[in-house]
Length: 583
Image (tube, rainbow, N blue to C red; front, side):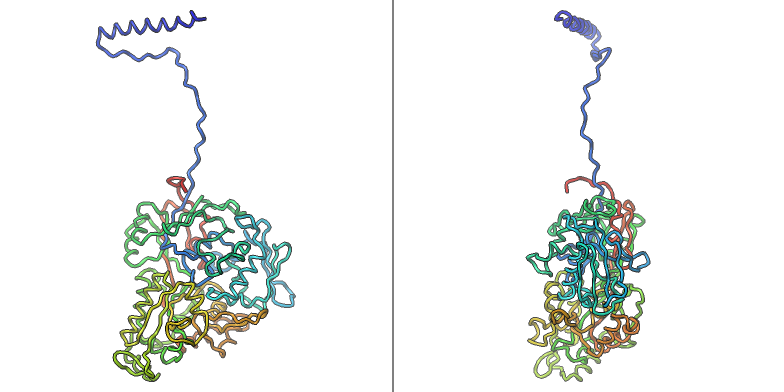
């Protein structure tokens, strides 16, 4: 066998020698040695390549902490977006804006006939569960009811305060809710349910328990990473979601300033953006041409200036009217909107927002001057017993000094507060702006009714820049904004005050009748509106709005139905493969 192995090598050696001689004679490079019958190289099985995750990168204004969609402090685009992506709701807006049962979560929700009290029975789908495996059940309904009827600073408490009891049936998958009175607007309740099993005994209280996100998801996406320092939240498809899976693997929320929003859309670093744009930014967006589609998206909140009659300084309606006469409303709108899309949604009603069905201006003709009216300020303050002295208005030796509060987390609120303070100073009315956190402002300072202490003490806010929620049951919204606080039937504990600090005992029966359907909402609202305008309780400015900018390569994006917003359609968004998988 050894001889047989040497023969080919000898032949190749001879061939190489011959070729070398020829090459030496011709000075040409030797031809490559090619075997006559080449053998293929050994094959190895390469690992299968994993497809890159499909992602949608969304530019947003900011990613401030606080994601509780039920509190005024956290009433922000960020909390609305995350709630749409992760929190289950019994009813959701349909294409025409009407409420439609979410059959992904619910089997049924209906009024129980012939019940002794007005009762609604909810049947939850057996497979509905949170991302940690716990079932979505009656305890989640109980938790939301307990919090929203009793916690200060919640966005829409009135409907929950009508509930007497929430009972669990059939292992928690059937819920029976009993009301003290009939409530036609019951379909607006139990939106954005929260995981009670994780929150009920959380060490932090209701106001801060959701400051860093949701501990579990009941929607098509779940939080993978929250990095507020970098301004980024990454959400990925919720594998435990029992409904149709999301079409993209992940959604990245990325906070950048307005100029960088436009540049990210231009370069394709962002697939879409949802943010509050000013006039200059809108011009830059229009310069992007057909590459980006622009849609104005109204938000469920009206910006307003509250003049709290429960403060010492503004207890007199004549003084409140003098303050209104000193304000430049259009300048306040410009300060808050920067000339962006929200400027086109100016509000001239006290209950409904401009984009809501049934909205009509209710502002009495001539009730407010178009510009500051120094003569009217002087006349009204004189009637209230004030005199001009040393550039200030003084009564009983004390100057009129108003405390204006705005939550420091929201830039537009602060701009309105500073502009209002300067306008008042221009008319000789001293004004100081304070900037507590949203939790402090709405959960503490505006939630009580103490006419105690001097300006600057707890509960002594005279004016506030605050949102008026929209989009729910109109009668309940009206009651939440301007109704007197009721008392819990099971504990005799009073419910929190509304943030306007307003209560009219003569008006309350009308508000109650609208809640229970005894009086048509339109009739009750007309009565309430006239009183609120006459008493100078609130100066509505504009409905909040954002611009939705969408690049052509992402599909499935809609503005959203009703006031639910574009993130309510995020499960249908289809983005592009990610640049890398390092998330």
